[in-house]
Image (cartoon, rainbow over all chains, first blue to last red; front, side, top):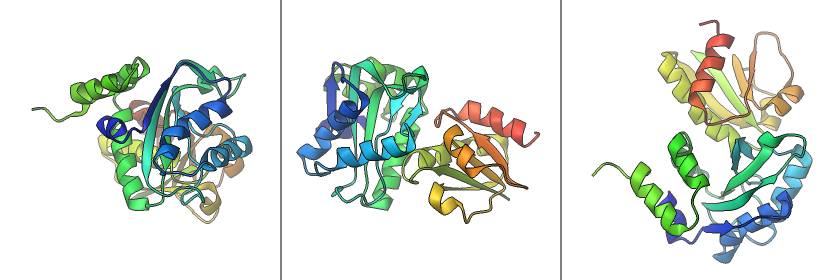
Amino acid sequence: MLREFVEKKHYLFAKEAKDWQEAIRMSCKSLEADGTVGTGYAQEIIDCVEKYGPYIIIMPKVAIPHSQEGGTSVYKTAIAFMRLEKPVSFDPEDPEKDAQLFFTLASCDPNQHLDNMMRFSEMMIKEDVVEALLGASGPEDLLAIQEKYLDPEK
Amino acid sequence: MLKVNTVCINGMGSSLILKMTVEKAFKELGIEASVSHIDAGQFKGCHPDVCITTPALAKNIGERPGMILITTKNFTDKDAMKEKLKEALHL
């Protein structure tokens, strides 16, 4: 999965975001660049989070920005990666809702999305992978983490 | 077999990840369970034995007679989920 992020250029490494809204816009950039999502997708996600709260934080430091299945500005099915050097806060009263790793979900094909999510979930269940991703600073780190923890034993 | 629903806002992100974590936890506990993920809107018509969701959504869903409601903030922590299941199911 990490190799796929690099091959498809679905990744972004950035210093910081001024607020969570900007972080979500940034996290959608690599998906916008190749037409996986339209420019409206980031705003759809922001609207959803404003309506329902930060439901996209799935574990400490990790967010999975997404709106609804078959959102109007989603054209392909993919996941994009973003790491911020400085975590951004989603809820000033709850530090557990700070996020540093973003996996932005785009889905218009439920089967492919399910396959993506199974691989994603297999990856996130490994604590050392999450730890390594928190310290990653470029695409070469993603490839190294893929080889070290995720590729099948040679 | 236990009927289990994992519930999130729109059924494509958190509830799907939670479903995979919960399935692994049940498997390790040796309990047969059928786990399906669903969005909060559709859940209104569901009557599972166990419902697993976020603390925020649990407030909307509310306690129901005959249903065990479990909440979690971490959707990938299988060991913590095992403990929650053990406690809720009195294992």
